[in-house]
Image 1: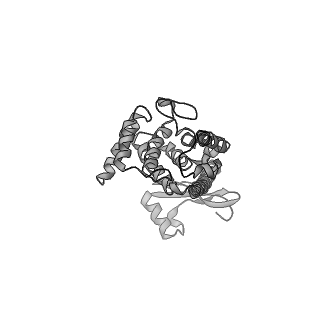
Image 2: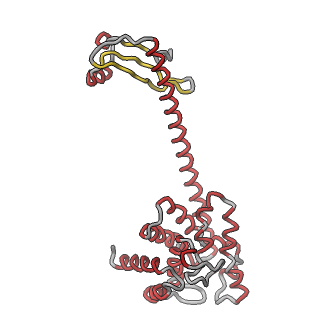
Image 3: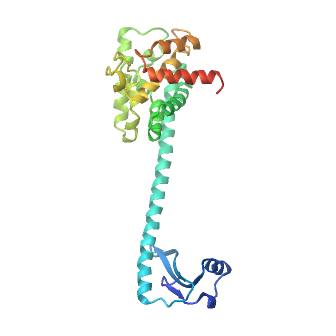
Length: 285
């Protein structure tokens, strides 16, 4: 029984004081003899392993009971492993939620420093996810792409306010400092193992399809796909936003700039998908 942790033999269920539920379960399956073996985990019973005969009664032997007891240990072990797996998976999920909340906090902190980009990060991240799915990026890579989009300008946390919020064009020295932010993002995030798969966008979204970008001068498909996707969205968002040194471009003018940049600044395939997305937005699809 469960209390003694010993097998319980019911040689003829018609003579046993079964509950209505037990009797219905036995009769529906044609069971005549039952052997109950408790499932024990950490010295505590958690269930019952049941063996029965169909159509005829049987006197289970000690050998039968020992064999079933061995099987019950295996079942109990499987249950234990399943519980551990679920516990680990739940803990990992909770940890990922906590990490992602932290990333959003970092992103919000950067936007508070740079008032011109308010709301920019969340918009670009959302569009990047859509385009990535349309372009066949593997589903398991999408969370990393999203985190990278949230952190795309995290390197600017190290850029002085006088440069970041300068109400006019930057001079050459200031541009040199500003262009260091992808490298700085890499150095900031690379030490965090959880975020290494998300580095493609913070590190590479200023690379150009023709190789004329920075920080490494990557070209074509050497640029990670996540960065190629994000760079199109990022440039469009920047052009259609007001800046201290220029007014926002019209939507049509910005789209024309994106279209003209296909094959030079941007991956042509990404441009096509982005333009199709924007057209669908215009049509309310």
